[in-house]
Image (cartoon, rainbow, N blue to C red; front, side, top):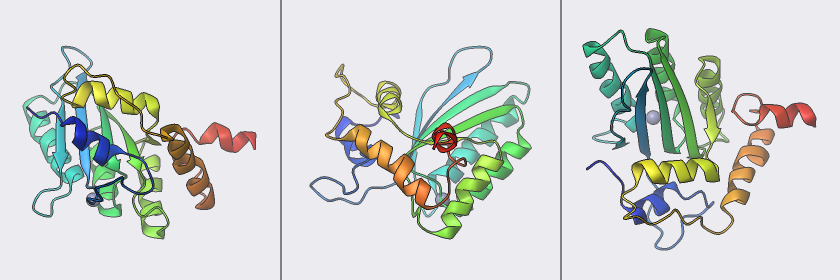
Length: 194
Ligand SMILES: [Zn+2]
């Protein structure tokens, strides 16, 4: 099975500024599911970086292989990521959606990767310009991710302490500082209100 163990999900997708004990490094996980416009939803897939290939690149390879078999289908793909994509992967994703206009891709990230670095900010802006919305995961997305990608053994998702507060601070405070408002989904309306 491709599903995540519960502890792995809580640790890797947690949006706390510091990983809770034990302090294992939090890695990249990319979980996605294809929804064809016709026919049943494809099985959920979770990817990690492998042999220096980032999860996003492995994702692109998977979808390209799949689409070689069926180019007529229209797909919606939602990706849940533990970290927002690095600049190289952002550029690859932009090319990928350009090549495949019949795909609608959107990304949700639990945490922003090196968000204070200019290059990484440019990567996020490029995704936005390429029509790939990137949003910070909130309770709703954590719950959705849990129900689709975690081997939950029937257990409901248990939000950790301050989950909503951390989502909010990742979305607003950090992005406002880097003038990324308007480039990351969910921040546009707030920007125009203030
Ligand atoms: Zn990358």
